[in-house]
Amino acid sequence: MIRNAIVMILAGALASSCTQKEEKKEGPAPVSKPPPPPAPPPEPTRSALTLSPTARYTIVAAASDKCLQYAGTAKTVGARAEIRTCNGSKAQRFILKALPGGYQTIVNAESNKCLDVVEVSRADGAPVQLYDCNGGPNQQWIVADAGPGTIRLVARHSGKVLDVDQEKTDDGTPLIQWSWKSSSNQGFKLKIVDPETTDASGKGHKADKAKPDKSKKADKGTKGGKPEPVPALPP
Image (cartoon, rainbow, N blue to C red; front, side):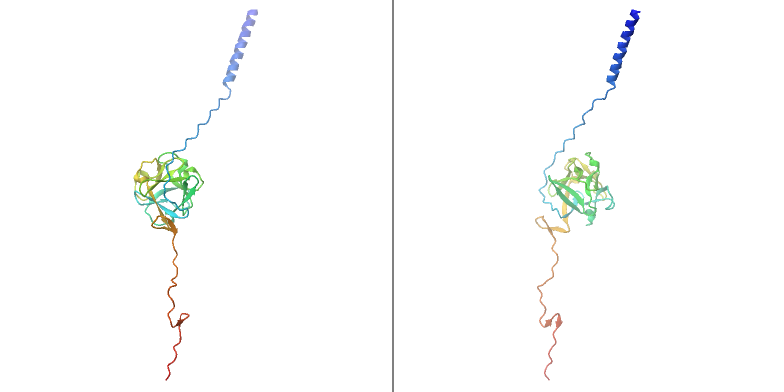
């Protein structure tokens, strides 16, 4: 009897120990810390080019001499940016709005939408589109030098540059972002268009309106624009 009682006590103690171990295993898993945010990409030195806050610019691809615009209509949210033969339309005009830190938002003059890297992507080949302006870092650009007479447009969030896809020059070729490689399809030229013009110094100024010529005086013998009556000669 005593022996059976001892066996039962030991069995109970063993079962209780196993239950406690199982309860410990079923507790909440330790919370892992989220990964730290990615370090901001290195930024190039800003171009010394003077940018006008009121001018309309065409953004011309250096390799093809074609203008940046968008595919589709001005109301299309998410329309892909592309190059096309320059035609002077509002679809090819952009306003560069300065932000603190030397960044620029690039706003289309026709749609009032911003040049935007899709889904804040950092990947090479990410599409560039026109999207509702929201102040995101994927809509902020650095204007940096890219060689004599050209600039590169660097996306703040990724450190990658505006790039004409596959170095093509055809109308309708889309624009993407890509790592800087000093390629001609990554260089652009900014050209001021109406309502401002450029002078020899490259600075923008408003075009002068035509003024009436006041130097010409009315011919003698006229009054109020009508000829004066000629006196009759004596008989």
